Amino acid sequence: MKRFTATELREYLDSAPKKPLLIDVREPWEYEIVKIEGSKLHPLGRLPELLDEVDSTDEVVLICHHGNRSRYAAHFLQQNGIPNVINLEGGVDDWARSVDTSLATY
Image 1: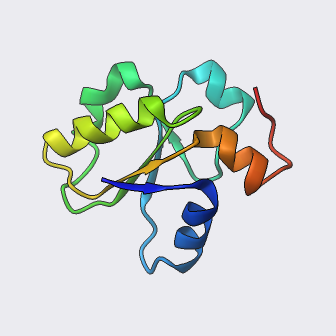
Image 2: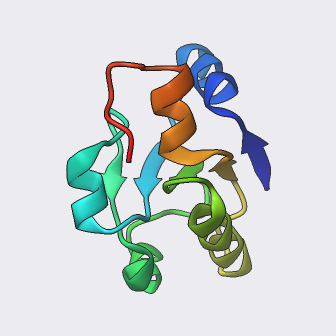
C-alpha cells in the first residue's frame, strides 16, 4: 500500500495520467461537513459492496478523517484483490489544513 500525505496526493493528482478513484470511507454526516472534490462516499460499514464497483486494475485512494479507517479499508481492498491502493495519511483533516484551507475542519 502506498501512503501519501495531503500535499503528496495533491501533487500526484495533478500529474497522474489517469486519475485514481477517490473513495471516502467516513460516515455521511462527516462527508456533508467536508469532502475532497471528486471523492465518492462509501462508508466503511459498506466496504464489501465496494468490491463490486472497483476493478482490480483501478487505482484507489482511500480517505477518512485522519487516515485510520482508510488504512483499514486499504488493507481490506488489498486482501480482496485490489492491489493498487493509496492511503491518505492525515485524512481529509490534513487536506483541509494544508492543501485547501477553504474547507471546514471538525
